[in-house]
Image (spheres, rainbow, N blue to C red):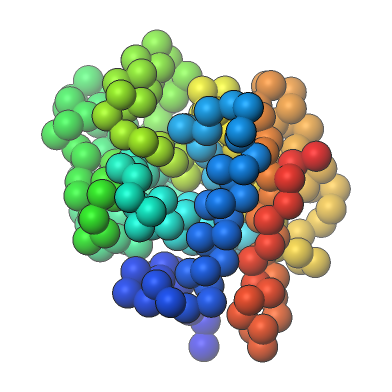
Length: 222
């Protein structure tokens, strides 16, 4: 039976091998940023269905469990998922803020994970991700939170991810090893490089269910 996305977020099982994998991912990201501050991170993929949202959700929890104050943002208006992961409504969200309908403090939601807050995508399309308003919001969020994580659409599916990548300190790309065409991954990498995004690493989601520890692997972007 296929797991629901909620089952892939180890909220209540911090001792599981998969939870340890995400703590390792968190540590690797921290070590990859010794010379550069990694406060705003984006998690994306080349195509849909590669585990992007699962990865960013678990990574956010790993940071929060470490004691960091975390803001998780769903920037995928075409296929928003994080509100389902954390069992929340999506009546207002990031799109509401960018449209001037709400203040960001009115749409931020506390999750059932201590120190982890969520801004859902909102009901409308996100057409102002590259605006001065978005950059001003990010300045304020940097002051309020230790870590800010964006979940974006796949790079090859929409331009939103590329836009968000330009305002982030680093980008992590999720890839299903052996299932996604290598040329698509290369194309996604080139697209990120074209907008001068800083690709700090790649998460490989493995398919072998017999060895849970082997399901997640991180490597540096180069």
